[in-house]
Image (cartoon, rainbow, N blue to C red):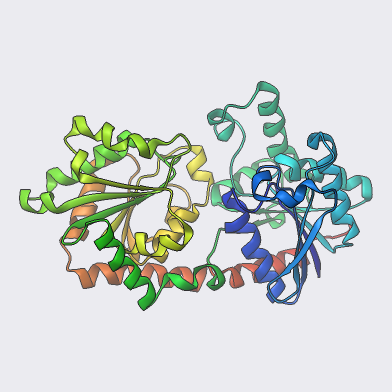
Length: 412
């Protein structure tokens, strides 16, 4: 098949592109399909200086079956010109399938133009943007909120099929009146191209080097890998305090909380200051946003990982790539049983799930893991990573999508 992907934004600054769109496109290309990814990098003009030119840029990737067409940022205004140019670029490719990623942003607007050219489309949704979701958290204007909420509900009904990143989104789309056979559950996955350096002796050595670099030798390291969109910093400090209270004083003295990642509003920069009233300031080590090449070592140096996850609609609907990457680091995780986390992690395979909001149960699960010997803990983490590679490799997920494409009425 010839398949056109329409991305909602550029490849450099947003997680959806690198974690979902490109890996799926590469996996489909490896299966022999011709895939063209059409990219509108409106969110990353400094990273795309050549886009000040007036011509699109075409480059091939993978085995030659995938090419990426990056559209220029002119003419402006983009709101009027870019959706039309995206739809035109998709039609020029003469695809059998057009797959739109996200019902909002420029890709969602392009989807509204495709019927004018008698083109149908498949829609992908990986977040809930409507009421109770990002609409309520982001500083959108009133008219933006109305448009995004309408797109979330209307575009799935216009599509010939919908791929969804979570069970919650699956239920949402069913509720919009889309028939179950028109909805494909497509969680995020892992790929060897992206994570080849995350396992083996190289990753172990990187973890040992980072322990020394951060002064964490002979420490018990609890890891948090976050953007602080999943929970508020105060919750993290409360959990750390509850954990330390359950440990003997000598063991508690060795505990350090390593925080990897940066929040949307720089929450990590104030974490140690916030921890002072708790008496935890000396317990926290913050790296901030880490370079990609450093992540295998940073995530792999911990004894175990903590994954607080508020039980709200945003978290229930999302499919966290950060959680997958924690599992790939082969360290056991204690996580709250919210949304997709329970799909990936099984008790004793990758870590343990606890009821959301139950601070005492969370702390006790951490204590139970710390009381195990290191070999047993590592085996729990290893089994979780092995399950990811077995069940959530993008190669396997791409086969599911291919079958879904073939089951849809492409002429509808």
